[in-house]
Length: 138
Image 1 (cartoon, rainbow, N blue to C red):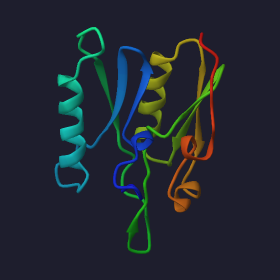
Image 2 (image 1 turned 90 degrees about the vertical axis):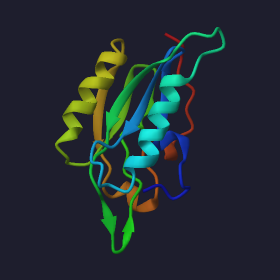
Image 3 (image 1 turned 180 degrees about the vertical axis):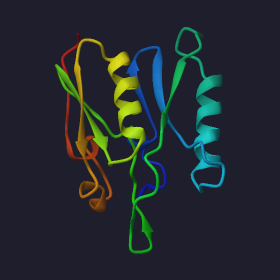
């Protein structure tokens, strides 16, 4: 469901040097399942610059959002990391709360907040796509 056929900020994001969150579709019938599963497996096999395995955390998908016949690029991975906050796309889906909990645990020094993005993804992006950010190192 991504207009670039896999823009990284919709698929996987480092949250610290050793931990990456990865968009993951649990529904094997969903067209995104095979590629997101492959991405997850590749990240599990990846190593950092020192040869250490990465910690890979699954971020569930928010379900299908469509405009006419086009699947919109709805993904929780398109979050913005600010100095004191993390703004996370929300879509009115049951997975919204679970994702906020996952990210809050990964960013204990920042307030994690959901921002409804159903309208924003009609422009084929979300919060990270529309920002140019450089957070302070905490």
